[in-house]
Image (tube, rainbow, N blue to C red; front, side, top):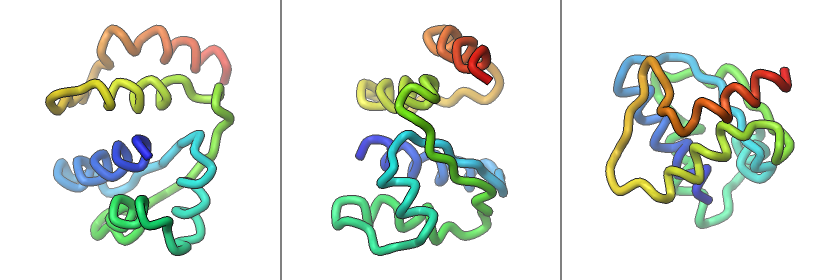
Amino acid sequence: MMEAIALSESVQFCKDIGVRRIIVESDSRELILHLQYCSSFLAHLEVILHDVVLGERLRLCGLWRLDVGGNKVSHEVARAYCLLSDMEVWLDDPPRWLESFILEDKKGL
């Protein structure tokens, strides 16, 4: 559920700053399947994901489902999102707490 909320807000942010193409990675099988097949969403996801699937001016270039351990960066960002009291934006450099997860994910490529 938190990944769906984070994805929805990320898509809105991308639209706001002019990003036109995105790639989505998630370890949530349910989330990726619903986005891939534009199937009817479960009630609690429908409102959240509606904008993602029907997003205007934004092209979804790829959807990938990863194993739970396959992308620690996205997992940590989703987890941190739950703890945020205000919006954070990282345009160039990631926050220091995320750097070790990025390096670990790069080693796995």
